[in-house]
Image (cartoon, rainbow, N blue to C red; front, side):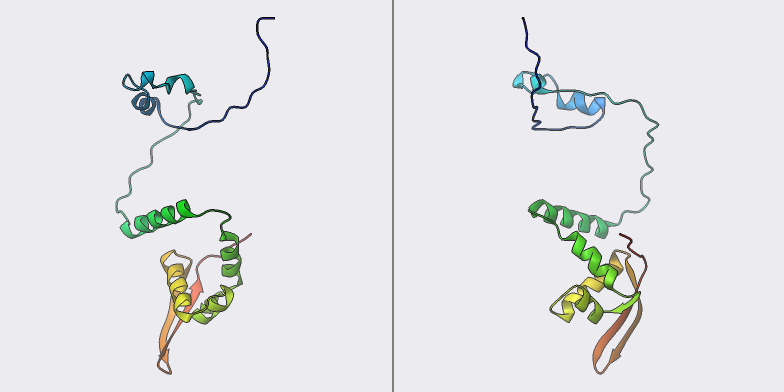
Length: 151
């Protein structure tokens, strides 16, 4: 027998997706002898009806910065993310809620943290502020959910 047939496990150190032009930039004459080409597998995908999206007319720099901030936070996070708890806590809020309700549903320790969370809901489009008044020298804001989470 000249060769043996058997299954073997392949561990990929690097997975790269892109266009043929991007692949040409990645594998070129300057790095051909580095050994990359001997460990490279190209899998052509069937053609699709892909069309480029139109560019946004205006750029929301604040939203982009929040995405970057979360990317860095997620990159440093290890273990299990507590997203399920956040979704369940948001679902416990009534349709109209106050910072005190946020404090109770999310088990927050300070009203300032609850106000910050409520303001984040407004920024992210999950709620809108429907009333903002001062009673007894304290600010009382009322919010209304703009979406309903189903799970």
